[in-house]
Length: 113
Length: 112
Image (cartoon, rainbow over all chains, first blue to last red):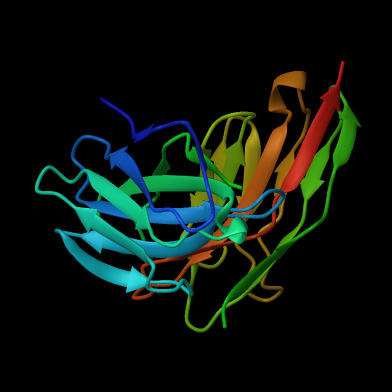
């Protein structure tokens, strides 16, 4: 089975710019979640998408937005980048939206200068 | 709100030593509990899970028991190997919240 893949692996952006990160879910998974992992910290929940609808959201401002496509792949968009947005962004897919183990990709390392 | 607290690292052990990484949680309701492992340059991988009190999760020689009375889910392994060197994350999720709460991670370094 194909695992979760994310692109790009690394990205450098300037403050105020916009960025789009991409994720392909594991085969058979209909739910995708995005997490932000700052250096030395645990992942923080950004939001979850289930059947193309946002299904839950963490404490992140509206400039963090997402999409899920009919093939269950997903995008994370961040507008008006700030220095504190520098982090590892992890995509995770799961069989279902609730109480289902997460399968993570290797992440996208975003650096904002 | 719900939270997960795990012991700070780094933890440095010699090969074949016994490992314990402490994890406690606070939650409304009855969470499911997980341990994830992150190797350098990689995403998190599920190591083991337990979904109700007194359940024991186990995998690759690691085990953890869901203790409701002490709200704990400590990770143990009887004999660690150099290849176990990684960062270990304790996590919880509660039905209906759709999100996982992760601890800050504990870095384990095993010396040959």
